[in-house]
Image 1 (cartoon, protein in one colour):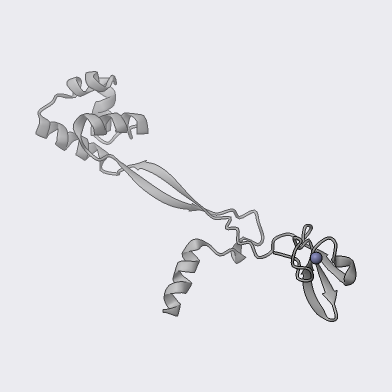
Image 2 (image 1 turned 60 degrees about the vertical axis):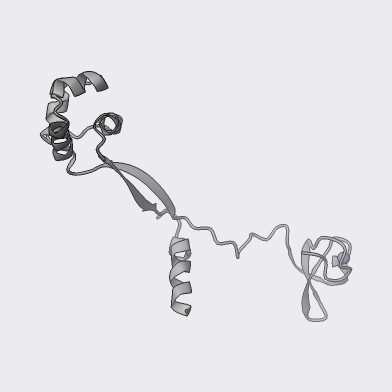
Length: 151
Ligand SMILES: [Zn+2]
């Protein structure tokens, strides 16, 4: 924003000149009554969303069945898979039976080894509840909705 009086300097303050609010540079602002300093004013119009989208990876619920079925199709014994991905056979047995949920690392190894999809990406909205103004915040999603309603 340029100074509205001389048009040359960068506006640093809002002053009242003959009833009109004008942005003025450092040199011109003594001409009017200071309303506020632009440099001190917090950017009110700035929309900052406290909500953040966090992408997490989750093991699919049916991991045991998926691993078992695929292993059957490939005709590979658990022992072979265990050796290939460097995990204990008993551990894999438990995973296949659904008794144990594999860690993401193990699931990724199994995905690669067996060619099955065991991990799904879940997008979560993480909102800060600490800020009392959080409810006023407009998220990008809200914008989209508003936009659609207009049309
Ligand atoms: Zn000026």
